[in-house]
Image 1 (cartoon, rainbow, N blue to C red):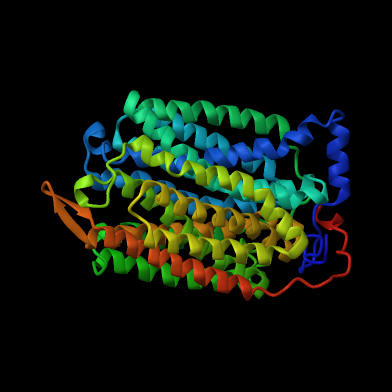
Image 2: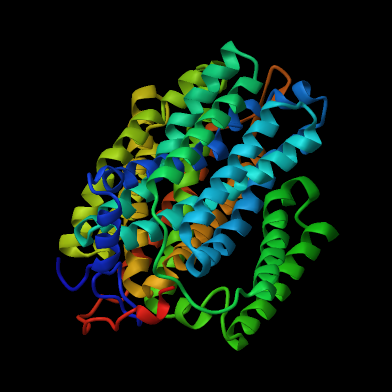
Length: 499
């Protein structure tokens, strides 16, 4: 590997020291647990994605099934989004300070509990609370990446992190058709019993395989910072997620946006004045950290637009002139080739990052996404071209998502890996929230009347693809602006960070 690999961090601190891997090997003479670390953690990442996406095919029927309104049901998506956004940076920082393993296990346990609650009730209030519990699983990916950095041999860290990042798309690609299949042929509660069983399996596997942490960030947990960030994120994401229902000029929406802006500005100032901040703002605003965060936001938008639009497009009635009238299961299966490509391309992205640097991998990935959306804009009438376009976008997402954690690991100390990657995952989440809002606005603004129902026009979908393609192009340009890693002297010992 050259000077652009994660063995040359820009900030004080070091990657996973060889001693950590040696201790892990000593506790695992046969090496079985060491070999299973990546598969088990990747399984946890897929579970997180499943928890987020499995409810999507249920949304049209949930008002009837739960005897509630469509507005109330929409909170089942919003609650998971907001809870995940809050838990990701908070649990990431707690993992850096108190150990990644207990935080990872805690997130998986809470997600499993949320699944069990969803499976055992039809009360919309309990369902919303349970979906919020499932949102805690969003912290699994940054915590897992930090664990891999500490315990994998140096030559496997980049590929392991790439696989973890790709699990988001893989879980979504496989989860949608699975959910559609269950919804069509079984009681909807079965869907959550399945995720409960998988969550219990994932928790047990992680408990057995994942070793404890030796690299930690000393200090006291920033409770005030955690509360400030949580409140600011909740206000901002609620306004973005529910603005369409409440009205973008309503007092509630504008008030939440204003409150989020004020709280986050005050929070940022507080972080610079705190000895042990939740987020190292000074480090986060350096170009080598800030620019990947911006790229993550833009890439998150591009990834989610592909997932949101594809199934809806092919399931639209044939009377629209463009719809194919496919079933829920068939609509979900259109994303399956993209999920397979994400699995196959994640190690390719790791090799590109090792030989040419993650900056190039990110630029190639986001550029591929832009090309995919160009294909989608011009060929959205035939099933095979729709699948090709969606697969090209997913392939680009795999390259981009796999490069982002390596860029972050290059730029931050080992004891801040989980917190920094948590912030990067948070930026992806914000991008997805913005995408959901933009897609909803476009698909409801440009409609046609079919059988008394307002359905999106093809022009609406083309606009969605155009906006996503422009932002993917912007992400590619942003990637090109990331400063190139320079050769650094060997990092200082991290004994002071060990407990």
